[in-house]
Image (cartoon, rainbow, N blue to C red; front, side, top):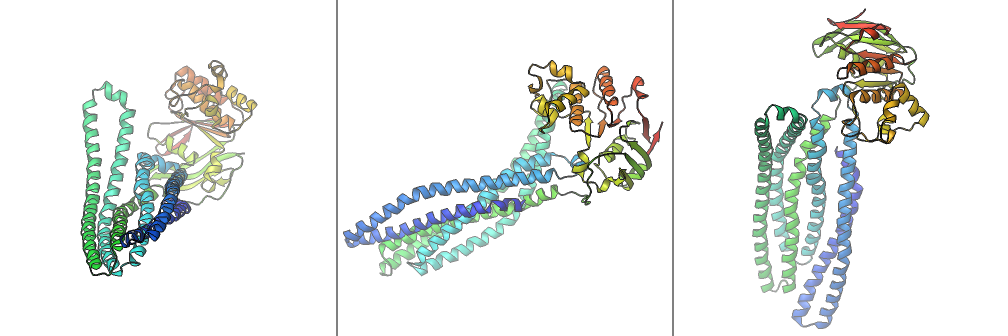
Length: 539
């Protein structure tokens, strides 16, 4: 994650470069003010007017520079955050499907919202503010050194003390930030669950329980935030106390030096003004630096969540599926729990296969192996003689299409949901629509293919959703269509019609995993397999 954020460094350098010019001019103006005061007290009006004119010109230049500094700061934060989010999504979609499904995806939602907000507020802004503070500190350091090395020595001593406090306070914040991130993850998951179960909650009078649970989870997050803010407040209060004591001490020393004639009255004002300009950035630094350190745990957590446990290197392409898929003595176990043992079967291109069996018998596992969601624990799955384990996922997925029990639809037009935002000719689209049995449905829509689908297809029936999924596969010229309980939530008449459509497809392998079996279509399958007792039997 940090590498992605570091791609915004050129914008950071630009922003700090412009800021350094502005701050340098401010430092030079403070020297001019010292001279203006001294010339005024000495009664030298000619030099007084000359220095005043130069100071006014410099102040005028500061306005556009400060505006430009603010704009480039925003550009740095914007570009860095976009690169971080793009990097995150890119890494997320490289996760293995089985590993993603096994995890609670609330962690990813939380990372893209809560954690990204923390990265922006505490890391990106913190990095910029740290650089800005160092620039202001350095300029004030040089200005004071040009007038009084003694005052500068006192200021440096105080700076070291502040830095020690900062380092001591940074460590505890890392632990608390990670804990709060974990709490946000659970909170996000809970909110999603409650909203998804809205109807059940209302129908079963569970509002009070939901309110109590919501209170407890919210209280946990807020309390952790309170702990973090309390630590920040302690750091800030300590720094403010040190700063006030320091400024007062330096003020006394400067006045004493002026009384002795070591420095002028203008120099006293310059020292006090620049000591404040040196201490305020220092105080800001001691507040922002612990925040930057605290985000380190978030980077570690985010990177850990994006790592694949199975990093087997896939090297081969599958350009076309031509012949068959074969299981050769395949075993599969979830950890130490065997699910399938000694499986041998052959599926031919263009064949139609029905897979049935009791719940928990291994049907879904067999389908996941066929879909390349898992690799076998032992044995081989050969696609046209090539070990499926060695075929790149992206290459294999181009040859297959999936129809699930719950078909996902984007909130977009019917056309975009069928084409999935790829370019096809009207002839290709219409052919896929016809083969999927969607022609009459499309004709009946008010705007045809340009009709909008809302909220994952709430404005169309389950049968049409399934047919859209079939049309996707046909349009993509998928050689294999996998169905996972695709008929479970459909009306029997609609399910039979869709099944007949699938069985009539020429040159396309259809593998239907289902507990819904119709007698009038069962015999139209080339083979029926029963999965039970860790075995796959042909019947």
